[in-house]
Image 1: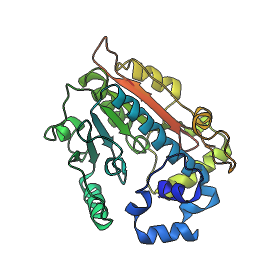
Image 2 (image 1 turned 180 degrees about the vertical axis):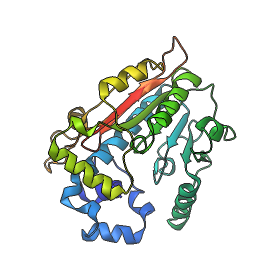
Image 3 (image 1 turned 135 degrees about the vertical axis):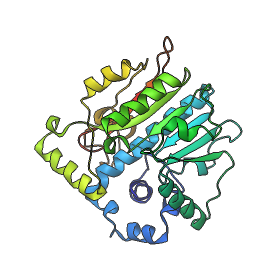
Length: 292
């Protein structure tokens, strides 16, 4: 809903998604247009900014990866992500794997059908219940090639998992996949490291989501853990960096005001591993990370 609201309210959009409104449905769109929906309120602007920056950064990374010859894109916790359906890539040279809980995936496919959004042949659905099976097990029958590089997008998921589950996923990417693979994800910082005002904002957002934050990371400690997996290239982008990238010069004041990070990373080519990119901070206590 934040991405859909961003298309309507924030001009120019930082992240353009022509299907964002269509996939949420006409009732949701009316609520956004009328201003009655909470995602359209002025107080929601920083979160709209984060969601837009998170998606924009990830798809910028994907464009770079495609330019290097990467032909596999895995969206972990895909939700209503629309990349696969926008027709902005060559399906002959990119396969998209959407990974999500079976129930959520059924709901999304119903939404796609109701919105008359065609599903390209290049899309593969991987329904995985992470309480019962691993990512490797879930991808085993999908045609995903462990021997070829890939980009993993893992957005809005890490805060709600246990530390053990998070590190197991990152270890899989770093240790089992080929050189040239990378992952982009966002994560929260501990509330002890942010101001009382920011803690109130975090508490309000957690209440709105309805799911408690289970895991937060101190950025420097997470960076050390990622390099030990091993990831060869770890980048951490905070709100200030993302504002400079995507929000400078705007007349509407749209910007990130929280502390979420995005991380990107790539495993170490000298050992088994991949690249990781961190993503921006979304909650005031959140950062993003990426690694290779």
